[in-house]
Length: 111
Image 1: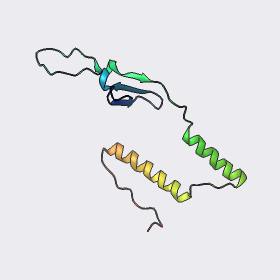
Image 2 (image 1 turned 90 degrees about the vertical axis):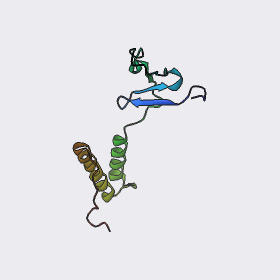
Image 3 (image 1 turned 60 degrees about the horizontal axis):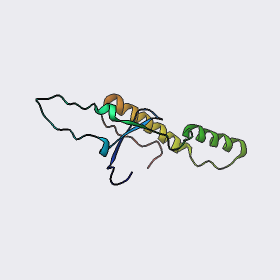
């Protein structure tokens, strides 16, 4: 982005699509209650090309774990870290369902 084009707003429609609207391409709205807004802002967003092809993180970690089992190579994550990740995912789901912040308690054995 060049300084002349202004900041870019981005929005992800899915895991793969990213759409953006640069400030220079966005018309300045003028509030006039006597006239309808002539701009269709949603139609002005542009699909950005994928910059990189990112591998599936779950698959990579699973392959790393299987390699650890087969060869005895080091595995960077402990069972406790995995349990903490599950605890965080469950708290995130609860927070979303109840539309509120939730506390994440300590695991048994934490001090």
